[in-house]
Amino acid sequence: MNHRQCSGTIGYFHRRTGETGREHFTITHHRDGSRVLRALCEMDDDQVLRDVTYAIGEDGRPHDAFVRLTVADHFVGSTWFTFEPESVACEALTAAQGRFTQKLSFPGGAPCFGTHSLITDGWHGALWRVDGPEEQCFRSPVCSQAANGATGPMLSIIEFSLQRIGTESVHVPAGEFECSHFLINFGAYPPMHFWISGDDHQVVRIEWDYLDAYYELMSYRLA
Image (tube, rainbow, N blue to C red; front, top):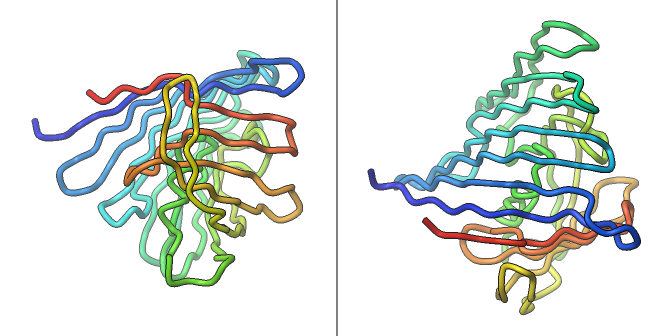
């Protein structure tokens, strides 16, 4: 077959207490430019376990996604998301609400999707346009509005903005990477700093004062 793959692990860290979790990921890149993420997110402090499968098209826009969530070893929800030119939809099964369907109008289509996998936070950097303003604003569907993503999974809409700080060399356990440094603003939350590398917009490091946390690429492998 003619696809390529990369895989790795992102470590989650609290600045005072140390490691709080990890994210194991594999990304399949197809010849047409589409890609599929498979991620397992483990948050030890909140006892959150999230399985994510997320596909984007050659244009970088969401195609479909699946998110399954448990908290403290109890089932919270399992939801399949789809994206159309003028709407977003999901088929959900949650412990709180049972089986239900959502469909939300989204004129022009969703530019991205918040899965609460850190990989997809990095992919937001692909939205940046060098010929645009200093701060660029976007609307996005997300599977949860909670900071730790431990609700739902179901559809809601958020607004955020991106600012590009510059280019920096960043050293993490996986190695040294030339990165674009971005600032992402989520409404009332403090801004999040993130560093991404290469045309694949691979997350290398994230810092978020709101959770007094940082996240680093611990290992990275090209298959």
